[in-house]
Length: 194
Image (tube, rainbow, N blue to C red; front, side, top):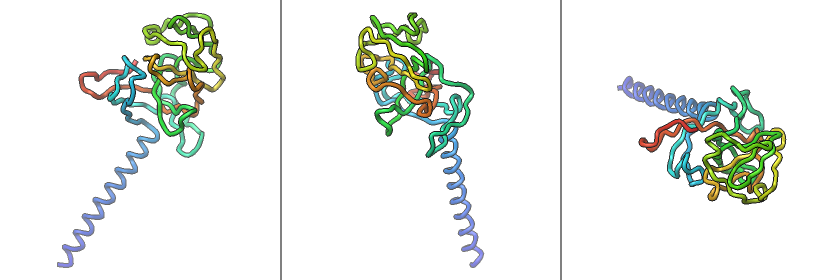
């Protein structure tokens, strides 16, 4: 009889240890490798729709070390045209997803629905297919925006319905979370994110 009680305690302990290890592994992977997000708004239509679920890689740009402003070296820096998840300067409690338009040193102008980058119309098809409206403090008509070094300028693909850099300015490099890689839900919309 004594043996059975010991066996039950041992089995319970194994289950508890397995759950603790699985939980620690999940936190580690989520912190340093990837994260899943659900799209809440229509600011990135037609690329992403409300309710879409996406996979975001933290490894591409390098994961941030929790509770610090330090970042582990990634494979590369964010590039213009990529869809990126970040923490905006005006709302530190939420993650936003937008398309990267400008990096440090770029001069950006929104004119007649087009983006001009360093004096030339931005011809990247991921950006050129969208119409961009002159709105907000940083999106005024005939107003050139100079992106400071170490900062990024983001716009939503659905410009008329996007709260983006036109309104709140620039994102610090340390506030980049990761690159949106893959749309995995709903099944009929599964695709790589461009």
